[in-house]
Image 1: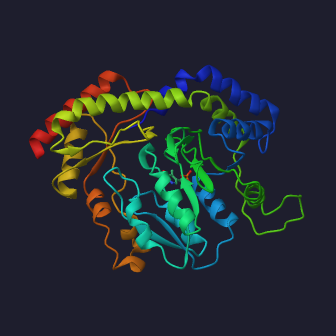
Image 2: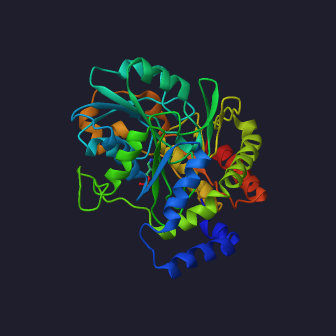
Image 3: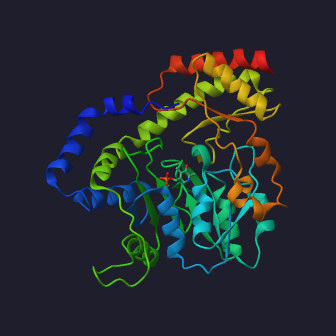
Length: 375
Ligand SMILES: *Cc1c(COP(=O)(O)O)cnc(C)c1O
């Protein structure tokens, strides 16, 4: 699915130097690369405060902690995401309320208002697979109902959207943005890492304090926080890779363009990713198609047959969040038909920066072959 070693071989000179500089410096925790990376990422995103942290899940947790939300408050999020999005809320005693998705796999903004109650405090949109959500619609609702917006940008770093007529980096229009640097993400380190950002000075201060045991001054802790840090060595790696992020994302977009072109003739069988540059810049963390007919068994059969031909694939995600055992009891009466259909019909095809055009062509040929056989 992804070839991380090939990327690291290509950037070996830059990465080896950055890593060995940290090794020799001895400053493994809170070394100078951490602050430098925070500043460079803040510049790249066009935001005032970036706080590096331990991983993307911590980033979401810190974001919610910093807002001081009351127990039992409701946060609205999408039914199609990685568990962390809802888990961070539930861990803090908040109730995730799931909203259905559209065919582009992102939260259906037209369904959010019906999910808002007197207890709702925030919306957590996820820019899934690298495609930005309808952020103008989300921020409009947030203003109307006085809600915070926490953007899960773990799959979309470097994507762009237009919010109220203004072009911005995905993740920066809401109250707080969060991301992950897990090795397969668009901007990735060689272990765990994450970051959280905001334009609000007071929230920026609180986020930094909470990520550091609730202390601004050592041994004078003022709040219950957590210990969530980005290692210096990971920050040094990320500084190198941030310089290449736009190139990485352009390559992903070029691969998606080949896929879309080569699969266009079977649009009656599969739904291709929605790719419209007029209001957003998709950065294709995943290239995900959906079978228009069939069920999970047929989908899995398609994947098996692709595998026999040397094509690996993944399912993101086989269980919608409201159907997850941990959330099911609270959501027995919730029906989200699109998310429930997609969890049985999606297939993510190989997508990574080092993929060669011939490899993409081969995958497309195999998709044609297998679908002709199975459907
Ligand atoms: C990867 C991911 C996370 C969590 O990131 P970790 O660094 O693994 O904790 C959260 N949300 C989404 C949508 C993700 O893809």
